[in-house]
Image (cartoon, rainbow, N blue to C red; front, top):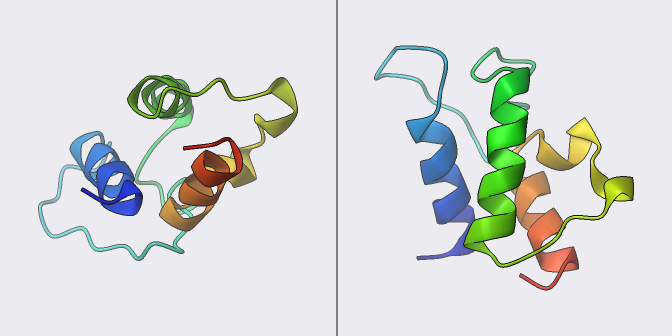
Length: 81
C-alpha cells in the first residue's frame, strides 16, 4: 500500500465526525474541516513514527505538517519514510 493510502486510511478510521459519506482530498486541512481534533494529532504522530519507523524531530511538530494527507506524506518522506 502506498504511503498516502496508509495515511488516508488511518485518518478515515479515526475521524471524529460520524458520517460515512465524508469526502476529503489529500490537500484538505483535516483540522480546519473539523474531521479530527487535537487529541487525534498525538495519535497521528504516534502512528507515523511507528508505521514508518521514524522519529519526528521537535522542530517538525507543527500542525501544518500534519494538516493534510499531502503534508503528512511529505513529512514522512523528508524523514526517510
